[in-house]
Amino acid sequence: MGKERKLFLILLIACIFGTIAVLPYTLTLQGELLQNLPVPLHVLLAAQLIQSVVLFGLAIFVGLHLARKVGLGLPILERWLEGREVKSYLRSILGISIGLGILAGILIIGLDYLFSFAGVPINLAQASINPPAWQGFLASFYGGINEEVLLRLFIMTLIAWIIFKLKRTEEGNPTNIGMCLAIVLAAVIFGAGHLPAVMAITTLTPLVIVRTITLNAVGGIIFGWLYWRKGLESAMISHFSADIVLHVILPLIAVI
Image (cartoon, rainbow, N blue to C red; front, side, top):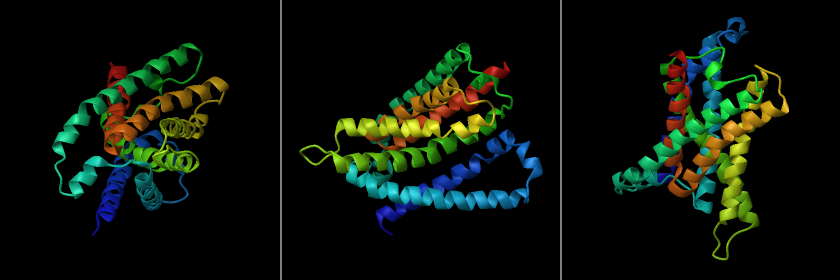
């Protein structure tokens, strides 16, 4: 089996794990909605798992194919599959990845408080349903793995490739401006993707829309920069670290 196929399978298996790991968290959040299901819960969960396999399989396939064309990738997994040493590179990215992830979590919490002072009726620390910390921990794997595959490996890479086809350097490489634009657009798309969920709990006002996109885009920009400069694994570690702050530490503090 070639390196690309192995890389595809590793990422797909990781995404399946992330999809299963987030289930306790989502079942807690959607407890009331699940009481009147038209089909048995296990049938719904099986259908969602199959849907996720198809979605992430497509995202991984396209993302890996286009990533090579714009100089993006997964340096740790690629080196490991090639039989090369990876520990030194992992050590070199671990500190900045975790540090920026924690910073992203703190920035999101701080901005959320500012928006609450401005009159936004929702707050991270005051949600009506707060899943326990252990569920938040498991859900963090979904953020670190699945969301990075979808938002960075697929969407950001796709945008970067489109911009690359329109504008490139004299050496035939993506421009820095093009990569930065791809980072920001992917982050904004990620934020906008949360609007339907927000709409289910409150009225969408201009301030609520700005809050939703801003909070999610803050992390997305940081993770996108890490993907560009350090590789997808760095973005995954950083996203996981940010989610630990938001879904594990913050709920524990809120209880106190």
